[in-house]
Image (cartoon, rainbow, N blue to C red; front, side, top):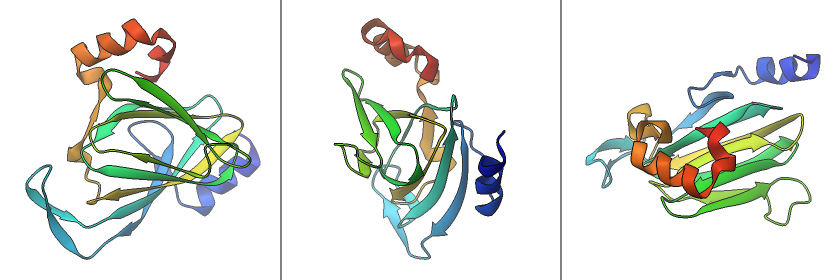
Amino acid sequence: MQHHIQNIIKKYNLIPHPEGGYYREIFRSPTTITSPAVNKERTSATHIYFFLMEKQISKFHKVVHDEIWNFYQGDALKIITFDGETAKETIIGYRQKDGYAEIIPGGCYQAAESTGEYSLVGCTVAPGFEFEDMSFLSQDDSIKRKLLESYPEYEKFI
């Protein structure tokens, strides 16, 4: 691992994320609400730093609440969404036609990879993120089959 990448991981105190890459939660709202998606108390919003290095991927996963990705530094980030029928690619970052942010509706599968050496982004979830509200596409055989039949090039993200 290159020295400047190690410095970013150290500077932001990032730790490995189960979906791939590194992260650190930097905000958890003290305000709580009842989530209509899970009918449980959740903080109103959470925010993390999320970091992917070259050749690292964020595996297809979904969270039950809306998620906003914001580009911060490094190379542009490719985000792939799959709603169970259609896949879409969006690239966020410097000089990208898609801009600096992407919004993923709750319940939509998402995956990502850096387009270069590394990408540092932020992810905000509202109502707030809890690991119990996240699932991987690999756990759903019928959706996995649909994705691979129509988009075999995304197999590496499963």
